[in-house]
Length: 160
Ligand code: ADP
Image 1 (tube, rainbow, N blue to C red):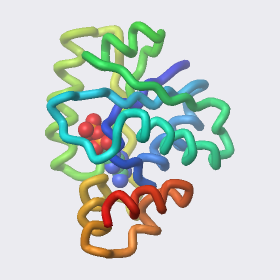
Image 2 (cartoon, rainbow, N blue to C red):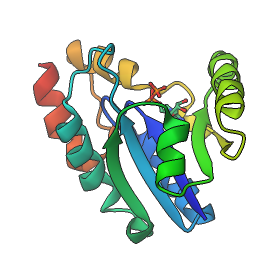
Image 3 (cartoon, rainbow, N blue to C red):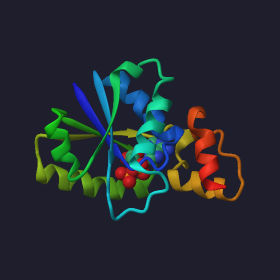
């Protein structure tokens, strides 16, 4: 079964990478989708984010089951167009749950054939978000534990 993992990934963190790896243990194919939202101000371009995810997943044992793509529009429509019946989302805390519940319910209304699967964050990544990484790096903090090693330099350089 194919699953779509949509997100902004600006930038990818070890929390995202952990969700990708765990999803690839369950599903035959995992497609990471950078859903381009022109209203969101991102630090990295879509092309940069694609390449950063590709570099990071290359280290995973099940890398051959993972692909990266960019898209625009409703994620359920993108899922349907590529033949994915499931979408993966990660949940860190109750605050995520409220937003994710509303989104998943709306998606269920739009396309009842697509199911959302939730994976809870590993305890060591519960606090971790792209915004946290940006905030720490901007203030000269050490982010080496939070972003995959292959993209560490690129993230640090952008935020100096
Ligand atoms: P979006 O703008 O779509 O929320 P994000 O890149 O912020 O995009 O997150 C994509 C998905 O990954 C969301 O479901 C989010 O809850 C999940 N996620 C983000 N950080 C973590 C983490 N540290 N552990 C587990 N899941 C996470």
